Image (cartoon, rainbow, N blue to C red; front, side):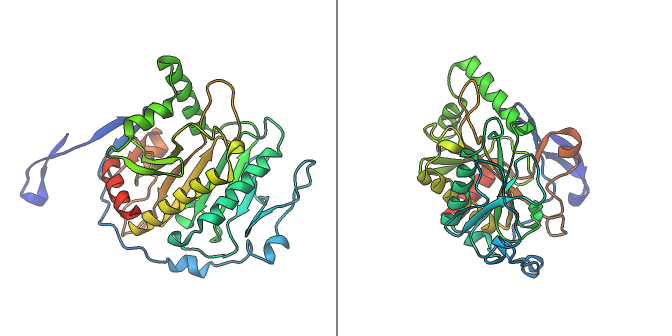
Length: 329
């Protein structure tokens, strides 16, 4: 408890609960501390996004002004349904593909099409199937709208791969190995058994379960989407139906968060390839993002995350999960 005499109530003695959580997989710490989040606002279409509408990822420009691959074994561009995959003009790694989601250059979060998102994920799967090891190991990322650092309003996902696993995903991998060595069982099996029907559980559909993270890194808590039976173990093994189920969850989460006043998000999906040792499990992390605006009183990255490497969340994951369950319907 943090204690002080509160001037807002004639300096009466006041106690404010503060909680430090230790993540069961990575061991990182998260501070659960109220930092002034106001009542959630109804979803509004931000005018700055409407004004920034650009059709460069939609026909006909998507096949006229985007780059093409020239490497042996890779298609120049990959197409499926209304989606197109091509190299990123501003690459993040040796391999840095972008997949435009659908052909509508401006989509609200509650209008994301699961079929289009599933097709974009399938393009990423097909791309990584064509890539030689070890460059087939990496992550897929999604920035949706400016608060998430998205510079183009057209929904799109991208990947970064060269064989190196980024820090957060590597920490999760080490956690999986530690858990298996200590207990002889898969972390995700025990995770789902412990969370099922609990205060952070959002539900199960299409072979995937969604759970609000116990110790999130973001101010508005993150959600994990993970297969319930261990299959697929990585992106290249995923079937069309499995990617469609993952896409459905991501679209439902986007719509539910918008209902609660959070329209921007990042999402990370991994692993993209098999790894040595204990099998991992293909999964997504849905990360809500908020603006630095007066209505929200705070950005979602503060000195705590940037300076200490700890997570900071202002809404208890159990409270956020309750709101999400209602918004998911």
